[in-house]
Amino acid sequence: MADLVLNTEKKLTTGSRSSRRLRKAGKVPGVLYGLGQDPEIFSVEYGELREALTTEAGLNALVQLNINGSNQLTILKTLQRHPVKDEVTHVDFVRVDPKQELEVEVPIILEGIAKNVTDQNGMVDQTMFSLTVLSLPESIPNELTADISELEINDAIRVSDIALPQGVRTEVEPEEAIAVGTVTRSTMESMAAEEASEADADGELEGETSEDTEEASSEDSE
Image (cartoon, rainbow, N blue to C red; front, side, top):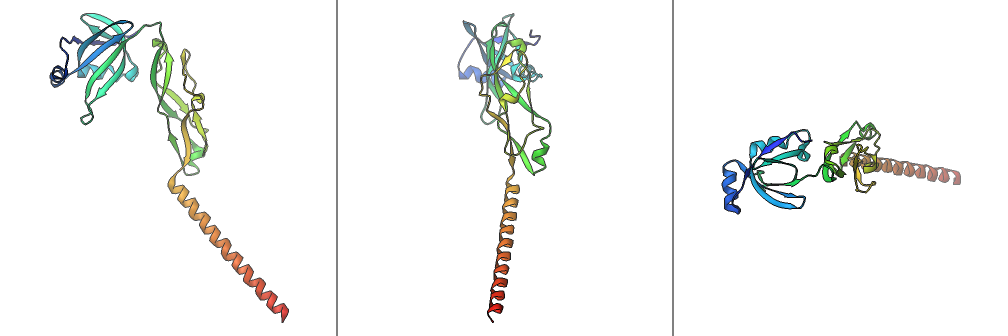
């Protein structure tokens, strides 16, 4: 199921000092847990970790984690980063049972051109970038696509519009919006200016009509 093998070293000591030493050596501390088994702490080379998590499957890649010469089927659970340096500081992996569903976040990719929106100087505002799904490990999709080609202004593409692959389901509300067709601020300002201009023109026309009527009435009275 998972051809990707990530070699690790068992971490014998815990604590922030030990973790700092590992990071200085180009390694990332981590922990493996799940399936009712004892947690195992380890370290992994940053370069190998990065390579394992930048395949087409992204962070949902199934990884054979090698600890003490024994491979265990796993998936990334949590990846922690330094708040300033954006470096990976810690990883959590969970053991995977091939016969049990996993809950994962799958990226949503917008597909197509929303011509009905762009023709009105609008824009597509993506409000949901990933969808929480439940799936057996072997069925986890790399990504989900949402077709926006029929999107209209003030309309939305919703969770129910995504065709989930066989064996994949979601418990997210079907009416949750993924992308919305909106009018840009500049277009709204332009429309407001046009409406104001039309209102002024109507006002001037009404004024001229009123003056003409008064003049006509005056002439009739004479």
